[in-house]
Image (cartoon, rainbow, N blue to C red; front, side, top):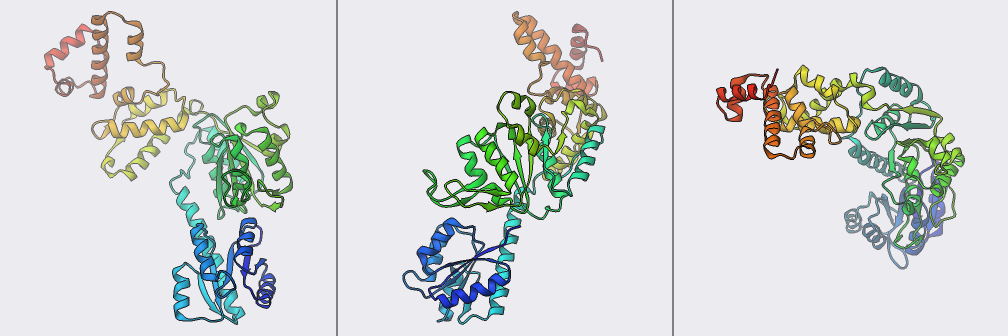
Length: 455
């Protein structure tokens, strides 16, 4: 991981020199500025972790610079220095958000302690933000099928290393979850996990998103911005939908992987980054290479360890376990559903269905079943009626609309399907079904006989 960078802003060269020498001995990268203009020049060019800011200076003083930093939404911690310290000045600096206030001539031990504390707090704040962003994410891979056991075994082997991993599979299979598991079980688990969806970002903005840009690099670049590679320094960068990345961006990602350095858009300085890259795609990259849409050299760089996540139809034995897990999570969030459960036949019905949207679709359908099903048990009838995948072709109502033109025939067919569903839902209890749908018990018997409905 690269050293933390500290900017010393003071119009006294002797003070800057003294502070620079002691802080460089501690392993920090030091930048100097003698006033407001040179201060912001450095901030626009460098990734600064902490500012030591003198209050009394020619031109803008430290308090005015601090106000400007606040206006620009800077999150860099600031330690204020003053040779004319007063309680009022200290209070004003604190109100502006200064981490500490130290009088000149500064005690070097006090400076070192304050610098370490400021950097540590800033690091913890950044990690807490990251944790808040990912706390809702699923952190467990569910399933005991041979396919899932193989994935878990591979993750256990590859996680402690820095090997790059290419994760393939259809949409909704859980590729991002595999990437998070690799990160969380790696030696980088305490650092950032940064995700970039290459398909969701316009190609002309992707380069800036990945590598950052300098102020004025293009229209709208009003200030310097670090990219995802720098944000993930020391941690893991997950490039999702890598198959949708432009060839130009692919070339620059390849260079970053080869050299361990990046250059911001509009800049000419090489910045070292220590990042583990994980990538995922739902495309056949070998075919994309043949079609000229993906670089073969980048493919080999990314796919040191390939992991394929199978579609749900190839691991149906995991569906009951997944359904129970999703139900449990919903119950934890919504106490009003705490008594909901699946019947065995309901789980069997879920297992038989063809989930074209994979795990993501199954999760959405379970939430629908929990909310819309009546009673404490989710039955086979509920699954038949409510859990029909959106892309399913076996929708009887749709079939009737397309094939039946006679109104009476359509009405009788719809009535038959309705009664079949209600009877299944109520476990073929004739009295309960009749009461629920609002007809006489004898009338229901007549309908069953009319339409030859069999259990």
